[in-house]
Image 1 (cartoon, rainbow, N blue to C red):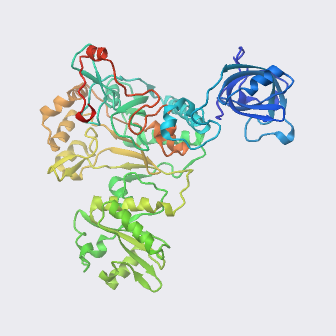
Image 2 (cartoon, one colour):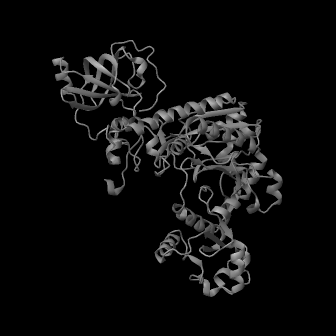
Length: 603
């Protein structure tokens, strides 16, 4: 079990005087009382051995046959029963020392046992990590939490939260709790609504994030705010996102520039990595990669930098090519991309067929490639390319016999994403170091994008970010060329958080929204309270909110977020243990002035 920071101090009561996992050679000769769960029980020729488990670990109890009543009581114990045992700590013989547990050098010869709770048959075992359905694990989560790995994950989460809090307090941040019942924000994800009994027909909303409150705290004069904040969004589950609720380390700072926030966050991640794990950070300070550059090189704005593959632009090689598929994609807004796999040019046909199938799943019409072999280049596009183009390609990409190059061509963003998907697909060819943390900042996100379906310019990310160049950029630049002070922090292909330097000036805000097609009156109607606050003296400020659940996932090598949350919901946003969501009584609905109208298929 976890090495929990506990001691026996203050435990002088009738249940226990010591913890199981803290007993050691120095405890020899002590008379102790222990309380815990029966982890395992073994009958060895007249002696009964019990592995007693508590929060700190396991200790072996020995029950001798001389005490007939005690021996008989021990024989009737079931696994996971709760007992309190009293006895003497003795050293084990050298040949029986168990080096796998902290208390493995000693055992306790029991003189008395009190059964506090005799457990019935469990739905699944705790001591043995047998495969168990997720439905059963979530229904009996309180039993699942007794299992060693999950138990340690929750302890680690607690320790991580404490470390984050201490780091931020030590750097002059002030912890402030913001409201849980607030107003609905239809511009974001889907809200969880709470009907008001006192105000019939009106609703509170659970906060999707404390965004507006933390900005208002900057206006209120608090220079550095943080909160381990619960957030609520009515959205579908993913492996790295819990449906319904999650926690984030919410941070906001005033009178800062982008690099000031980066320095704080990098220091925080360095601190928790070095003090709480055996992992190592690849590069510190974290590299900064522009949005345009990261899409060109990795095909994703959340790249796993451990994968030793980069995408390269070869559009210039095919401007005058006779191969029209490539030549037609060298104009503005289009591209021809290439990705080289060194030493993979002699793979079987099945290898390329599977790769092409994946490319089509990603939205490509196919997957062009050239294998460079001793006998000459081979592949479906070789016949369309001239010798000069082939030579230029080899020189530009540093190709050698035994290599293979894959191509993508089309609209810039779509082609980048398809090639990025193939980069991730090929990641399995390379052994990635699980102890390596490759953090990076993605910066310089475009402020606007063009919606071809609606035929209009829209905000591409956060409309409340400060545009780079401020008002001058909005008035003089083409909108799609304007970047914002927006940034993401990414680790091993997982986005931990987005953040921004905020737009704290109403004049710039009105102009930014005007470019996206919003009239001043509409902006006032939707965001009037924020603009009013900014008119009354707002400092420049910015922030970020890395997800606590994802931080624990990365440091604990977990692939599913439910493994780092004490009481998670299932994929369908149901709490199987508490049977939530559930129906309520007609009286409750009446008090809230509500009536339930079910969809036809559920009536």
